[in-house]
Length: 456
Image 1 (tube, rainbow, N blue to C red):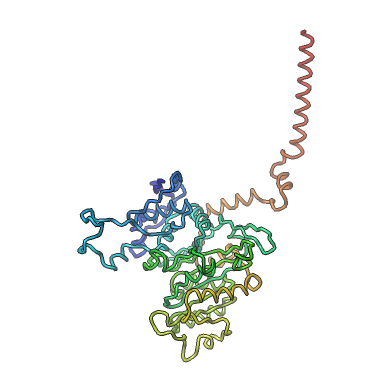
Image 2: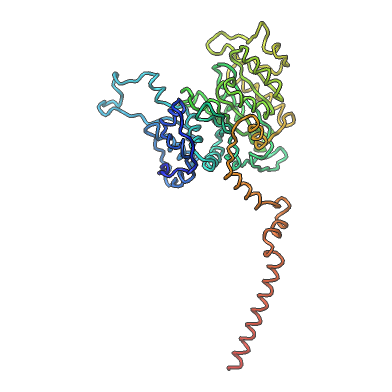
């Protein structure tokens, strides 16, 4: 398979990035040129699938190419950031000499978190390429970005609605009826998960267990246990991802009986208050992993309680190297401090990730589908705009969407009525015209036969 980034990027210009950690990641991945001119769909037009050979990337700059190539093949390893080891040709054993072994700090500097790779590719792509990437990521059961942090930390994040308009889902209810829907415009419950403070429990791994079960090896969300997951994130803090649960109708296989969405905010929510406010206002339920508990976190928790429809707090205080203890503030427990019911607070400091996931599954089973209010991502985009986030739908996207809606207007009335309005000549008039043409053809043939008879 061959793949090369196009040398003619999109004409949509952006300001060059400032010299910061975000710009450094884009430079290492070879994507700095696309910070001013976005990568477009023509960049992947020469992807071919004649061979399934998977060539390992040699260096970090090869990772965006490898990610897109693997993604177009729907590979489970598409998000991997492992590069081929460069062996010293002078060492017969294929090992680096002791004098050339790098420190762990150097290895971390020369490595990249898989989430930073996905974020950087989305930052560099235009909305139409983002849409193609999002479709293939959902086909691979990967989490898809919803809110993309800005490469310039001083600017607001971007709500990605346009890429999700192309994502279609199919699920089967308990009565066996198959349902299809555009996941951007279909009302579904959104269960959001955030973290406040430091904790060693992998929030994303817990969510993977909640979505796919403890026995599944599917990783919807990138987590610490994956290759490169331990590398500190430099670009993707503040990213909000979406993962969908769509039941199959098989009672033995399905964990839940109705579809829903899980959103995952990366990084400490106290550093991304706009995203936190958005999730509180749009979510049917909010799950909070609580680590350190100080005055700022207490105020944020109180505001979350006021805005969120349903709230679950998971107390993971004491899991970051300290003894297992229960979180307290001014001598009060978390439950007493926020006046929460007992069932809304889970003690996760003494539980494994699998046990925390089991407890969350039991709660969600009792909530889905009757106790959770659904919302569309289109409605969430309007709230995001009001909060101060950028919404990605440019005038070009809106014009294309308006054209599609105009063409499909009236289709919900029925295919027959739609055909009569949009293609009036293909109904009764077309049938009548065909009959007249047939009669004229018969008359011409009969006249020709009479004329030939006279000649004979």
